[in-house]
Length: 258
Image (cartoon, rainbow, N blue to C red; front, side):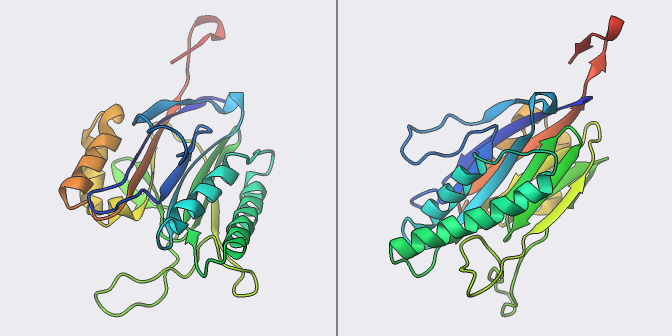
């Protein structure tokens, strides 16, 4: 495998919300509600030679703590995913399992409605696999261009109103069979990927996100995106994961260095 993946993750409650209903999976770490406050950003490297890795963002929905619990259930289940030779099949199984676990929790606690979005990137030796449901987005920044590579799941809305979701994790099977979006791709040196909740994209226009990614050193991108969203109002929770594909360099006698 000739590539490593550099990552940076940040999750923030925002300026208006009382609690953070977002969650994430980043190099095996999730936002644990019972743990002490996490120190952000989370920075590091992934090497598919050491085994497949999963990065993802979850945006919980539901009153009080319901959304917070739904996103935690989804993140906790994602931390247990073991990606093998067929990552898309594992992601499909993950969505089914996470959906069932959230529905089971809602039934056990007599909750009418709770759910979460999910947007995931899996990095394996053979390539990159994508999965998303809801409106948490995944973008690829390549050759100076930012392009959304996830698919939003929206219903029809009144003019001027943000459309409601048509898909999410936490929908009982007797109401609807969920249909997450799946795709796969290949490694390309210097490509960057952005996974984010709508707390970023509702506050910062895409051309501004693209400009920040283009003009900023990698270690500072998540903080600049977060600060921009907060300065523009920060009306929702904001979770951002940036990652960059870096090709390994071969030294003398085949020795690898970074």
